[in-house]
Image (cartoon, rainbow, N blue to C red):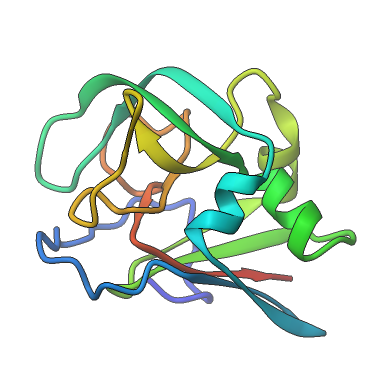
Length: 155
């Protein structure tokens, strides 16, 4: 999927069982600059635990429930790219992308979109994503969840 595709339309994503690399940092990019975020820096932000979440994996039935812990996407954006943004394009190290609109990341404080770094009280492994975008409304086809977050591009 590219930035020009209609991200709301159903699309496929071939599963990639192999992590794209060992670098767990990700970039937050705006038209004005770029910030690199480490897992340690992500852990330093206010944490939220999303209880009873499911993981939708391409080609597999949804699994869970899991308790994911991480920083809400809105907190990451506020910390690394303060300002007014309309959308975020979240990309994986394996090239998969999904778009999240500002009303979504600002919308539900009780079940926020999360950049998770832990599951069920333990750190995510590299194979599980190490840093993984969890969209609580996603329950079926993994079209909004990003494993191996590599970049968040704001527009």
